[in-house]
Length: 259
Image 1 (tube, one colour):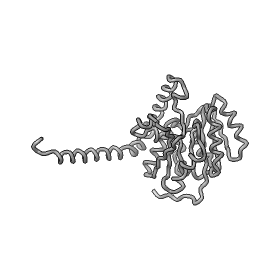
Image 2 (cartoon, rainbow, N blue to C red):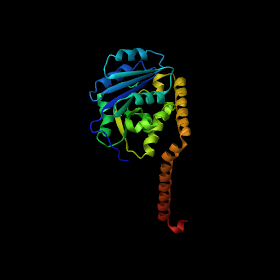
Image 3 (cartoon, one colour):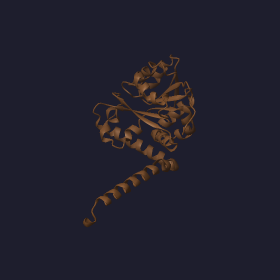
Image 4 (tube, rainbow, N blue to C red):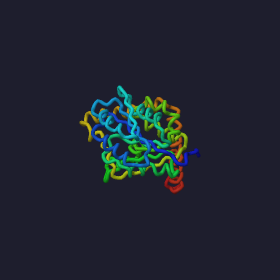
């Protein structure tokens, strides 16, 4: 799908935060250090900690725009609100709990979209010797990463669908791009630290939060069955064709006397 794009696009960075007082300031400082980011939209999604106080401090920067939601509406709603409010042509979504986010990481995510290599870029944090990444043979963690760059005009048609999606929002966005056959590029963000839930919360609470996320992702699939079918059936057909091809090759390679 060949789409018309601005020659000199402006970039809006979007940060959605819920109880992220520990790392939010450093994430915002990293975005402010990137001169190529024209605007930073930060959404406080009904936080109960000092996140709103931190955002009030950053309102002194001309590039920072704040949105306060109450009560908590969920990640999908917060991202939709920011998308609707943003003025940039390109949207750079950044998680609020990253430990060492800086302008270089922003550039790595934005570069492929600015160079016309992709319509959506997903940057995934990669620690040295990350056991979780090695175990994730299907790349689920990468597809669900919150660090991503998209064209705002591509996302506007699904803003309404994003609002109730909560933690299913990345899944919804992925399906939107895949069914439109728009190029997607994955970028390793080596050294970027994104704490997993077991590092942020007690084990029992972390498990509860993971279960809740899985439920919200499954609800997203259930809420959009046609989109789900259009996304994954072609993959299943490709797998079937590959298995038939392998089966045929094996049959041809086995002497008839052995059958």
